[in-house]
Length: 416
Ligand code: C2O
Ligand code: CU
Ligand code: CU
Figure 1 (cartoon, rainbow, N blue to C red):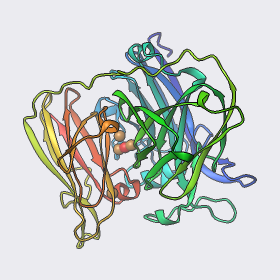
Figure 2 (figure 1 turned 45 degrees about the horizontal axis):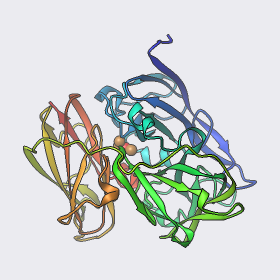
Figure 3 (figure 1 turned 90 degrees about the vertical axis):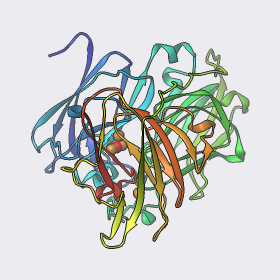
Figure 4 (figure 1 turned 60 degrees about the vertical axis):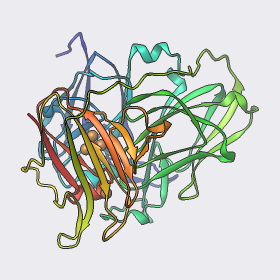
């Protein structure tokens, strides 16, 4: 049925062939046929209904990353859409404008599924954000960053925990593509949808990027910078003013860590521009006093042979944290470097949190907006604070380096 107060989408999860590298045919998994799934555009307060049909031979589960939704619609890893069946997810969009994304979350399979293409953008707008007059419409461009390892014939090689060999960077499914832009401001919504890679993005020459939003929406104030760093699943919306460059300029966005170009902007003619970047965007919600503090320790367990959360591997039947509905909590997340120091991150479903501090130093300007994923260098401790306002039920939190989560670096909290 078509409901007057909702936008209805139908997506079929199915295999397809994409041209990711010029002239090569790459078998991929898709939402409806394209390597980057269709972009869903939503408005705060207006419902979106997505009918997902699973045409794969394995179970799937669709998670809307960063969304505040009832547990039955969150895509719990064992809440699968069986092959050949359809599942309806409903999103009320009761949250602020943000760059969200949807991706597979099937137990133990999310790493391979997402790597092969089960990912798409979900862009949420609200009237307050619109009133700010940031660049909109065709000047607001989502860019999904991934990496891949290609076989000679163009096939995607997926080997668990093989991230060092995934050396081809893709922007919206293409290696270092170019984007013709007019000489005016653009909003770019950068998403790190890779399984494991950290992207450190910088315009060649150290030209200015102005970050306006992070995972869960607008920052309190624009953060001008020359680099923005994204661990897996993190988002940064940046505004670039191309009117500062003469027509014909080719401006390259590089990934500093791999030394590779990600994307090139070819600056065209100057254009009339009514957009702006106001000096205040959206104040951070003051959260109530926290009543609980918890420790979340990320570590390698020698006996279990894998990365764990508080010493345990994922058990979808076990509840790790029981949280009272309405309560505000501080989580002290520690990436133990003992005995193996590798970067991790932590993503929490259901809520957007505030980053309080990193090793005791207050969050920097790029982390002062609502966040759902935080990066943790080896040895680092990050404290975050969230209110679990509503929606009872079971949700997961996990390292979003999906090779890690797929192999058990995940845990369950239940709101009661
Ligand atoms: Cu982006 Cu649990 O996921
Ligand atoms: Cu999520
Ligand atoms: Cu990890």
